[in-house]
Length: 133
Image 1: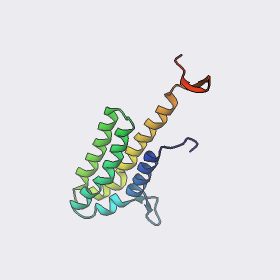
Image 2: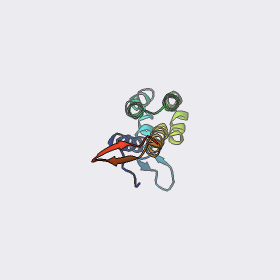
Image 3: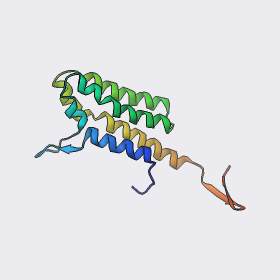
Image 4: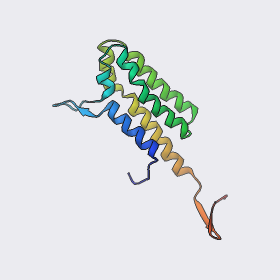
C-alpha cells in the first residue's frame, strides 16, 4: 500500500479484519472473526457485533461516502444481522458474507477515488493553491 491512509480508515480496516477474518480454521482456507464467534450466542451475539460495524459506517459518512454507497453499507449490515439471527444457518452465512470487510472495501475504494480525483496543488509565490484549469 503506497498511499498514505487516513487513521480513521486504517482503524476501520483493522476492525473489519478482527470482526470478519482474524482467525483461520486449521486445515482450511476459511477465515472467521469475532462476528462469527459472537454470532453463536443467539440474538445477543449478532446484536452486539453491530457496534463495531456501525463505527465503520460512521467513518464512511465522515469521509463523504455518497449516500447510495452508505445505503449499500447499511444493507450489508442489515442482511448480516437479520440472517445472523437464524440459528446455525446465520452462523454459516456469516462466515461467507463478511459485511464489515465489504464495508471497509467500499470505504477504501471511496478514499482512493477521492485521492485520484483531487486537483493537484500548484505552488505560486510561496503558497499552495488549487489549479483551476
